[in-house]
Length: 576
Image (tube, helix red, strand yellow):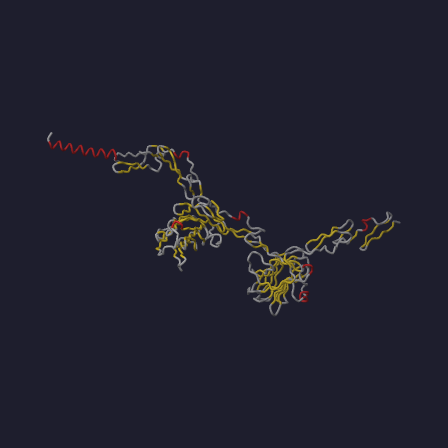
């Protein structure tokens, strides 16, 4: 063999050796099986096994040839995805949690709901006071205005809130007269889940929203902040700077901005906040419940005294109360005023403080056993233009001393009755518990500021006697339109005309003790009722006061005579 030929074979053998090394150590021989992807690493190779099922199985191992069995009896919860893997030859698994869950088995819900005045407080120590906020959270609500999160570090306030249904991130410092804020345009007060991220890092105030309908330029904003370093005070280090975070509100003393809805996956930096769990579990919490459910509070029947519950939003409601009840749960009852207690002449005077308009409604609850009595008078400086009184146990209304309307139902039965007088520009209507008692045409009257309202009688005794005398009974929840005329204030704030005087009127609706003078005759026993009495009569007597003696039932006549009863006694007639 010539020298040239020898050199050719040496070069050829060396080249073949290089190719052989690449085939052994590299990916040219496709060593990764079952969909695995081979990666060259400095002449070596590594198989990245497919995360997708291949031939009905997941594979692992150096060559992706080992069927992974870790998930055959897994304990992942709440719909989590099980991921099997090999660890030093042992089959294991991990759980990939869905949104709203955490824990090694995804066993813990990260969702929690806020009820009225609810909040969570988290307090941490910062290692860098210049980057106080990096938070990600998901929320759902129907509120257009609420506080999602407030962060306080030294003199810095960072607020994440809803304003007019949009997310806003605000930075405010004590020495600054104006705040800096970012606001994203999408409406998020729709009851669906939305994920928001707010931060203050590297002097950049950032805000972003994760939403399928979002465009990148509309759901992500940043602004440069020029700010001096916070004054940490003498002797303080950055390690001692305290960060206070309020989630869902601004603390116990702030209720107007409270968040009503649900949150989940609340992350502060790399730590999650769940009520009662974790290093950043709340230091304080109020009206916060784990889990998220738009529970219809009306199913709990929160409205008392026949009030109607109306759902008004996320876990919120309002009560439409029946008169004379008011308040959030219809528990506050307007205090009744007692007129004519122990037959005293009593009355009250109010002053109208506005101009109600052309149409006016006067309404009140009335309880009495008297068939006569003056209920109400509206007067100005020249005349009494509206009078309401009882006549033969029925309600009578008079306008301008001329037009009159008499009701058809008796109210003097000792029960409460709702009386409503509707005065319109050309007509007068009377109602008893919403049942019409009649309607007549009238000349118009006008209620004006400064007019007086007399209730139960007039200061002039003779003028009161002309309309049945002073009223004896109770009046409750008196109103002119929506303005109350409160004899005694209640805990629920209500718009009321000013009370000028209260003459011998007592609080409540206690009746007189009618048994004081022992009205029952012939040994009858008296039992007191409200402003009335009843007698338990002995045998052979009858009547309301046991005044009727059934003499003949006492067999006063001899056996040979017949007893005949008379109004004043009896007589007997002998047989022939």
